Structure formats: C-alpha cells, structure tokens
Amino acid sequence: MLLAVLPSSPAIAIASSVGGEWAGWRVSYSPAGELQRVPERFLEATAIAYGQIPAGFEELTSEAIDDDSSLSRRVVRIPPQDGCSCEDLIATVEHHELSLASLVQAPGVWSLDEEVKADSIWRVRCAFDGLGGPWPRAMRGALPATATRTRVELLFDAAAGRLVDEPLTVWQERQWDEGTSLEVRSASGGRSGLDAAWVSAAIGMSCWAEAAAAVGAAAAEESELHLSLPGGITVVGSPGCLEVLHQRTDKDGVACGDASSVRREFSSQGALSGLQRS
Image (cartoon, rainbow, N blue to C red; front, side, top):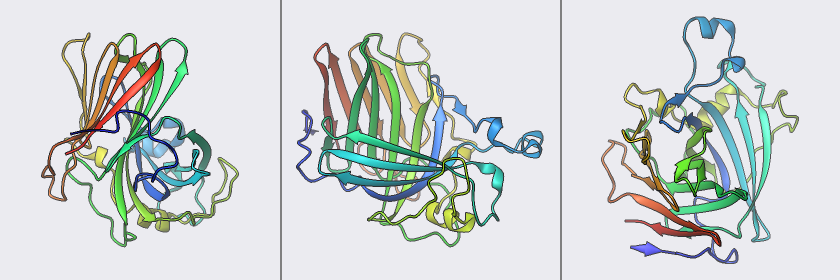
C-alpha cells in the first residue's frame, strides 16, 4: 500500500515516533556496510590495548515540535571513557532545527529530506516504529518505554545513485518520556550532570551492533547500491531513486509483517517521496 506520496502539511498530526525523550545507541557504517567503531580519540589507552572498542555511542535525544514548522532536536552524546560508575558524565551536546516542510509520513514511518549541495547530494533521514533484527539484551533496571524506533541518516548522490563517501548512521532508541523533561548542562564537551547508572536505565538495552552476527553486507556489483545492515535495515539505490526499508521484528527476532519502506525519486525539481507499510 503506497501512502503520502507528497510532503505532508506541517499542520497535520505528527507521527507518534516524533517528539519526546529518546535514549539509545548510535552506530555508524561505511558505504560498504563495515562497522565504524568509536574512534580511538574517545577511548582510554587501556581500552584500546585490550581491544575494548565499543560499536557505538550512547545518545539521549530530546525532540519538540516548534510552531508546527520545525523539529527542535537536542542530542546528548556520551563518550565511553568515563566508565559505568561516574555520577557526572562528560557529554557532547548538539542542537538541531529541522524544517518540517519536507516531512513525509504515514503510520509507523516518517522521513525528512534536505538537499545539501546543488549537485544532487541529499541528506536523507528516516524513522521507523519498532526494532529490527535480533533484539538487543534488556538492561536490568531499565526505565519503562512508551515506544521504540529505528532511525537512519545518510548522504545520497541522486545523480550517481550511490552513497556519498561518509558514514551511514543507524539508531535504535527507546522513548522514556513523551514530553521533554531531561535537564542537562549545556556546555558541550564538559560535565553534563548526568549519572551513568541513570543513563544506562534510560537506554535500557545493550548495543545491537555488538552481536557477532551484526555484520553489514553490500552488493557484489560495485555499480549497484544494495546494502543490508544489522537492525533490519536495507538501502537500495540507483540513479534518481533511493529506497530505505526496515523489517520490524518481535522480541524473538521474528518478522512482524512486511517491511516498511521509504522510496524517493529525485529530479531537477527536487525529491518525491513515497511511504509504504504493511
């Protein structure tokens, strides 16, 4: 079933997986599907020596809709060097304002596109309800979650039909508050006032990309964009067209219906998006 083939009016109801307080894991992959672990500059020397390099970053994301025209997003990224017992974690704080003019949505899926260069380079952002692949291990003492979602962000060269040579990012997140309530010291790179035990409870799950089977794979033909990633994500592209799919699963890793997808067709006039869900 094809839904919402044109950008939605920002005045309509926004998808349930937009807004509120989210906590989860941010993981990056190369355009060939190779896991890009946390850079060594964020790690202690002993962790590097013993090969204890995390697959991704813990992140806390606060979202609010501003005047039905933009999505205000604050991202608090926790580097791993402080350990699990710190009561005042170091954090990087970022603020983003995303226009909702290009919002396309349907139940369970939404997307925001942005042309970042005049030469057909697009930043593509998608979000899907639920988690895919084998579910990560639940953490003891996890805060109750009102929702889960999977997000994907990438740069796509619409003329060439391939990913731009920079990491593709995937998030798995739990919503622990439908409002925005998290207080964080705003100085980026300094102490945040957040306790490590609380952050772990808010995230509530281990990083799915740490699993031995969590390996991405690209198509054998270099001229073909077909990338399969852990977490149930598939990216398929060709000149003028891009499709991002997500296969939602239950706690046992069994597929829940057909995959949801966001399909875009690009032209000199911009991007036309269609959403498909089971």
